[in-house]
Length: 478
Picture (cartoon, rainbow, N blue to C red):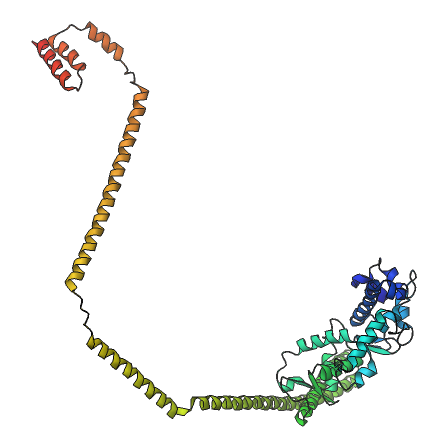
């Protein structure tokens, strides 16, 4: 497959391999049998060829490929689309004729010579356009099926490049930055508007015409091109032409200085090489040429410095013009605002009236206050009420503290009861040596003291029991 077909297959989903048989077939009969399929095939060809042209894959007669123009002279396009499997697209002419009929493509010369905008449509042509559209839907009339001949401007591509131009020039504000000669404009914008692509001279001519006539972005007289600012006149002035010539001359001098610098480096290298080869004549000739080049370079730099100074003054003057315009508009705005205010005398009168009315309000208020009883406040009553409120608040705080303390005591008592209950469940613990002591007690002879001790071991804390046990102890002791 050719370079163009490969691009379409890889970058356009409408040209996937499963769709190629339908696109390369003669689908003209589908205009009435399958209108949706016919429209889809026509749209795929128009969109695919426009994309290929914008990317630089469409065939062109010029050495630099056109990106805004589709070249349909001869069979170059059909040959580029031809494949071994499907041959040439049989209905390509139908698709391109439809694009021309709908205004998506326009003959180059017609586009350049048109006086009115390509978007302008007169009211008188609308009824005929509607009738023609209806006839085409039923298969009567409409564009032919032959491949159109000539060069055609692709309006979709033109819109894409126009948008890129507006974005690239958005930060150019001063007249010096926005004014170009035709040659300087071509050098400045031939590259950069399309990624990795360079616009041809024909592309730039079409772009300038479109931006000046249809988009009102540029102003041109054929030699000088200026990017318009909002509200700026479309006519090219003598100042614009002078700025354009100055910028072009400065660019030429800059290019000459670069060439002379490279020439000096080359001559210096040649002189050193001749010295190494002991060639006195060649070395002297190279040095003489180097001196002449250095003299020319010095002159070019001096001239370029003077031109840059002039350019700086022009930019300063342009800024002054803008400043004066802003000051004039500001003066007019202040004049209108002051006229609405009415001047200092009117303001004084308004303030006097305001003070007078405020004085009347105060006077009326004083009269009303004198007529009614004066409101008095007993300070002692206020203090007593305040003390009562404090006492009540303290009482509430003490009550809360008491309740909190009782709750804490109850909690501690409950905890103590719980621990005692756990100890009672465990029962008495055996005491080491208790049995031996018991035996010793049995073996000991009973004396009055011993009997008293035995009785005391069985004492309890009860009141009546305590008295009984005390009597027993006394009797035993006797």
